Length: 330
Image (cartoon, rainbow, N blue to C red; front, side, top):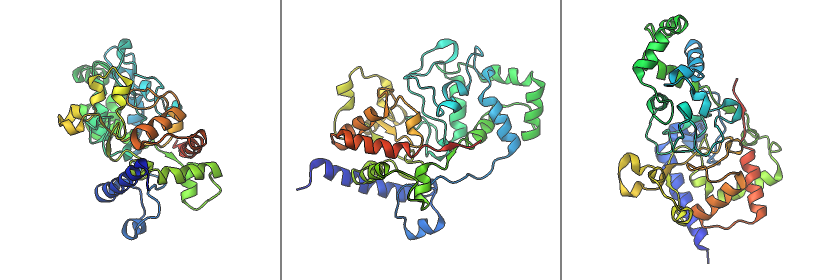
């Protein structure tokens, strides 16, 4: 007789795959042939995105590192999304303007353009919508748009750059458009697993391959699939156990998507994170409670699949996840 966890894993795999095939075809990164004839793999390799306007990207790159976007001119987007550190700050809770402590763990900015929504609770649907939100958040950049635009307009080089790209002086619309254009270039290509998917079967180790087989058979792939190995659906944190009761000290941040929809069924539901470069983005989960990858694997197996993994299983899954580390596009 099948175990309870096996039955749940199969159910998750079936429903997750159905969601993915039905509602996210444009997010999958599949070839035309795969989309119309079916794909053997539910994970697809990353492809180089369509080119952006170089001048707009350059403006966005500059704004991404611009501390004048914060009230006290103490932090920038880059402060919480360090591109040399996996696109995160490696803190449980990010530090904002003048040392303000945020409420949540900062997700990586790399490959974010592939996500179907942004933020842990999915409250932003586009990169443009996401890019503007931290600027006015009092625990993040703590600024006002009138203040930010006054600073940018007073800088002749910014004034010239905005005129060149948008034909207008610095504006709120221009700032978020430039940031989003730059963030669409932040992609990590040519991971060992991508090379494996393209037919280079020796690109990953035998241990990583066993990990991928378990990743599929255990049901992890039901929520972590597509080109971004996640990021395209929502899931409750605690399908097979009450994570928040066990952890304790529940706050409104833990309510997840409920804070957006106010629907009881969305309490403790979060956007499933991408697993691209996950080996470089500790600590894990919205609360930063897992300090390392093996711990995160065990927590996910226990609370999402009802499985208690051996050390060998953890090592194999970790080897697979490490093979998802790609090279940041210059």
